[in-house]
Image (cartoon, rainbow, N blue to C red; front, top):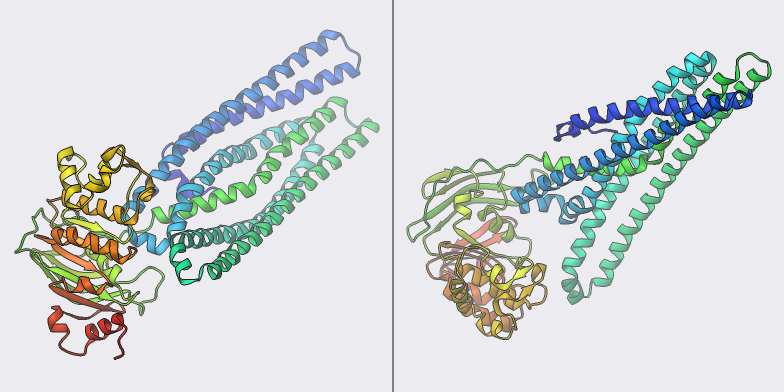
Length: 577
């Protein structure tokens, strides 16, 4: 039940030593509690002096208080460890996602990563709170009590020794079944998370295409399958709890009958029989507690295993090798033999296969192609967000294997389809690439992006707070904030656009075109688009098809023959070829 990788976490071994000591003390306190209670009852039965009853009862109360005091200390220590360690794991997980970027998101699914970071960490924290205490109690308390019972009555000790392996055998059999069901349930939960998040993101598009109801049925099917698997898991969990309770109750009943017959036949004294009967439920209690929380620990273990898999995922990125440089009109990038496949695809399903590509100076390069042709994958690879399986790259004659180089990424500004705006003021969002920029610089960048008139309408101006993801402002104004970021980051001379106007109406797009054209000046521009009017602004065009470059050249060169560019433009215009 304990993942061996837990011992790599800071503080785990120290925690186990502390818990072992506390649990051992607790075991002896439980033993004394039963012993003194039995002693007072026997003295009362034999009508001895009142003092012989009060003294053991006082010791019983003291043992009872100490037991709960040790239990409270134990709980506080475990809760502190669980809280700190789960936050450490969350931090490592977020760091890993940040470092891996879109590559991991594409492979694992956004819903899975969100589930692991939020619900998964909560399950792990609960797992830490339960598993260490339950296991320590189960491993230490029963043996201590059993040794004492053997000293009082060998036959009772043998009876309890025989019953425990039977209980553990049933626990293993039912536990394996519950674990298989829990694994299946958590996997389905991950699928449900990915489907649900994808549905939320694509809801406007689904509504526009009239497919929202059809996709709602898909969500219903996935969620109903999750419900079915959850019920199957609970059925096994309830059955295992019932079986364990029944076996332990039966064991205590058999022991009680055996002791009762012994007392009737005067084969042994009252005290050993009574103390054995009092300690028998305490002997089985750690097993029962463990069984009751077994399902919760399984969920936590599955969540922890999923998180460890993400943390141990090997990164394809090599160390930074690119020396500091400035991108200017003489700079150039050469790419040869670039290949990339998303995890889970076969070797024959290459998502990106680029034989040769050159970028230089202050070109404006358009990347076009049908949906799914590889435009976004290429853009993300050049941006260093995706690590290729193989590539020979030269940036200003420096040999590299990928674009995930800090000195390269510090020279580029990325403008995606959906702008990322964080919760904060408009000024803070504009200063994304230059957090220490002055207010005058922010105002100038906003003016160049055409934001001035909009900001004048706001009561708090640049200090107006916007929600996570740009809640509270229109898509067009979100894109203007992204442009203002680029204007402010005037030391970054590489612009990467991934269909930044795809979700805007044509009027808003044309309103943004003028500031964007101004931004293009003195920059290397890599612009993925499906809008025809942008292609006319490009110096060079790359036509993507099935992850490969079907054609590349200037728009005039490509339009002179009936190739991939000509066919794609004709299809975009709705013409018959």
